[in-house]
Every structure is written in structure tokens, then in C-alpha cells.
Image 1 (cartoon, rainbow, N blue to C red):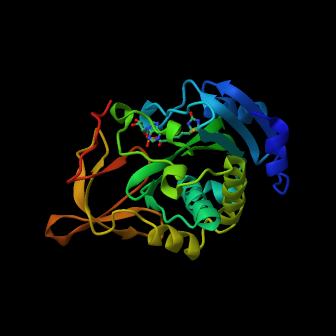
Image 2 (cartoon, protein in one colour):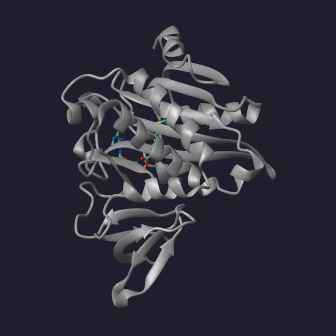
Image 3 (cartoon, helix red, strand yellow):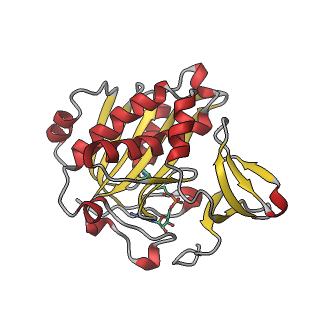
Length: 268
Ligand code: BT5
């Protein structure tokens, strides 16, 4: 990966710092260590290949050389932002949705809480992690993986949910660092409206599977089965259960799957 090319693409962004790797275990691990060591706000770690890329619940995220965007942005939240940490993952999802819409006019949906889908197939995954020092927050790491070319799509045996990539959807090659710059600009934008109504309404209007039956798995608690209604003002997913009762579910240690369309691979 050529650092000058990346710097050139990100020229208009107020990056606190930049670390570029041809190959790394996980950009999130590097970013968490950098946050602990005291990096500035809006510092970026990016790698061409990840050998130990991580998803949520210690699942693996596959990043093959030259095929994807895999990066981790470190934010040092202001006190007011710390109260809304649960919105950082959807903020990253909104930023990916916005960038894909602005650059390529692709319609994407956000699978609550934060996967980005094209035609009900996953093209991007987000892993938000925090670096704490006692009660002090050293930083929030937004880890984002976006599948660009068809080589980025993992084998079906490694897909918990059907996967796709940007170039398959578009039918032409894209300049991945232009997309990176656009996602980072969108993060700047949505960060400013983290607590405002247009954040929730944009999220709501691009929410996947509204009106469809889903299962929210929140082990060790029993799963919740019901129909997706909406996102509430606190960013919780409102599910209508049997008997028309409603329940609001917090993002966190939960994941969502379609109740009538179980994952293609067995969960690990
Ligand atoms: C995610 O987890 O989707 C979060 C992925 C975050 C990746 C970024 S890349 C930069 C940064 N550094 C890291 O180490 N991670 C972040 P989850 O919702 O748990 O989905 C994981 C599941 O997605 C896996 O179990 C696979 O089934 C599937 N998967 C793995 N690689 C994939 C890919 N490239 N495209 C689509 N699905 C994939």
C-alpha cells in the first residue's frame, strides 16, 4: 500500500495521524494500542490485508490483499459524545451508506445494528471497540471492513450471512481510497448530529428488514422473535412480538437474523 497515494486521497481530512500496513493482524488491535499510547483524535490505521481480522463475538473477518478496505478510525469522544457511545456503531453504518450513495448511487440498507447490505447481502461490517484506562476513555475505535472487488467475498462456508462487494453491485472498478475519504467525511458529518433527530431518521429510513420477522439472539438470555417496527429515539430496535406487545432492544451483545431465512453457514 502506498502511503503517499492514501495521504493524497485524504488531503482534505483533519487526520490526527496515519499508520499504513501492507499486512497486519487486525487494524483494530493496532488502533486500540495506539489509543492507549495517546494518539490524537481522528487517527487512522489502514491495512491492505488482515491475517486476524475480527468481527463481533470474536468471529473472523476476512480481508484479502488488494481486495477491500480495512481500516480503524480512532475517535477521542467529547464528554457529550461519551453519553452516546452506543450510537458510534450506527454512525459508522450511516457513514458507509452515505458514501456509497453519494459516490455510486448504490442503495444500501443497514442491518441493525451496523452491517451494510446491498440487495440483502453484506458488503461491509463494523466493529466498534473502546480503549479504557480505569474510568477514562482513551478512545473509541471504529473498525470498518468494506468488500470492494469480488476477491474480497469470503467462501460461502465462511459467510454467516450472504456476502457481496461494491464492484459486483456496480459492474465497474472503483477507486477504494476515494471511497475511504468519502466514508471519513461522512463520519465527520454524522458525528456532529449524533444526538439529533436527523441521525435517527436517516438510520430508520435505511433500516433493513422493516416489517419482516427476525430473531434477536442475545445469549444467554432467550432470543426475541418478532417483526421489526422501527428505531426509537434512543437508537433501540423496536420489535413487535406475538400479541402485539412491543419490546425495544439495545445494540450491544446481540445479533439479528431473519427468522425465515437462517444463515447460510453454521454459527461458530
Ligand atoms: C462484523 O462482524 O461484520 C464486523 C467486521 C469488522 C471488520 C473490520 S475490518 C477493520 C477492523 N479490523 C478488524 O479486525 N475488524 C474491523 P460480524 O457481524 O460478527 O460478522 C462477522 C461474520 O461475517 C463472520 O462470522 C463471517 O461469517 C462473515 N464475514 C467474514 N468476512 C467477511 C467479508 N469479507 N464479507 C462478508 N462477510 C464476512
